[in-house]
Amino acid sequence: MADIKNIHRLKSISVDEEHLFSTIADVMNSCFGKTWRGYQKNFIPLDDGSGYVVWCPGMAKKRGDEFIPFDKKLGWLNLLSDDGTLFIEEHTNDPRSSISENEKLPRYVFGHYEDGAYRNGKVQIGEKGGYRFIGVFQMDLENLNFRQGHRIYRKIGDKVDLRQYAGEENIPYQDLTTLKINETADYNLVDSLRCHSVVFEQDDRFEYKGKPQEIRKPVIKDGVSVYPRNKQTAINALTHAHFVCEIDNGHPTFIRKNSDKTYTEPHHLIPLAFQEQFDVSLDVEENIVSLCSNCHNEMHYGRDADTLIKILYSEKMAVLEKAGIVISMSDLLAMYGY
Image 1 (tube, rainbow, N blue to C red):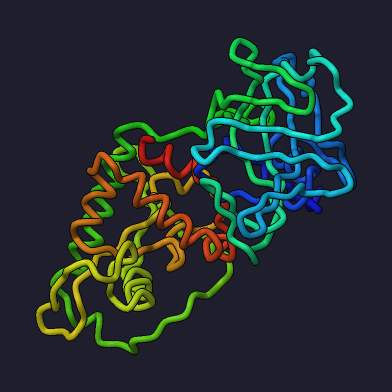
Image 2: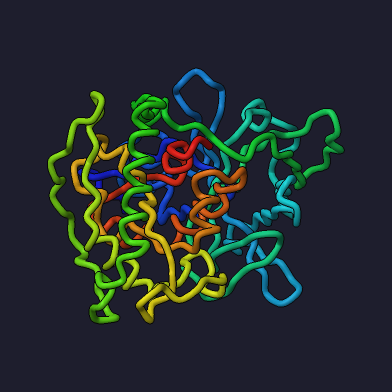
């Protein structure tokens, strides 16, 4: 059940993200601005004037080559097509004899999977189950060959902007001057570590502190607050990663001059240009990733850097939260211009 005092409001949700909700109340609280507790119906009209509904059907379970209803007593067999574009609803004893007006409404669908992740027709048995967003669907009335006990809904969207339900405006992103000044500060940090091998003469082990850290006082430069980058914090983060690229530890690199350590560069996953939007420090080991030169440059200048950001976010989300840093995938991507 959601912690009503500390609901994590999502600003958007996409089928590509790994959000898993324990209950329908969790879906409604995190995505649609509610503060509900306990049991909820699985078909919920939204009261925002949009005409959309939230639907949380129990998805069929795969046992060998056979699909069986999520709940045998209810008997509904709900399936997602292999390409994720069609939702098929079937029941051998369907009491409905015609299509109701409610069935025609577009719907945000959160499928309830008992066995865990369910993508492209495959179930991974043994993982934690729950409600997963599988898309926005609507009955395709033009192409519907209606028969009793059978409904087909076609996907009309992969992503939902939830800011109107969270009661929040878009996160205020920084102006170009602030970004450029902070980019220079990031470069200076990398440059300060490039040739000074003596700073790497330390134990090869470092453990995260696992708690929020206070924000250090910024320096004002050209009217912009620039928060300090601590060199030792960056070294600790590289040490924790064993001086390999955290995108792929097989990425090529080389041995540093006058050191036995391989060369990687520190990168703040959540850029320090956005420090003022957080009440804890972003200059912590948990927020610094170790990258090969190629991946580091792609993070800053690559067209497809969002792929790298998603990989790092998935790996770092848990340790970031322990450091008091909570951010959605969509907000992080927007900080990089996606």
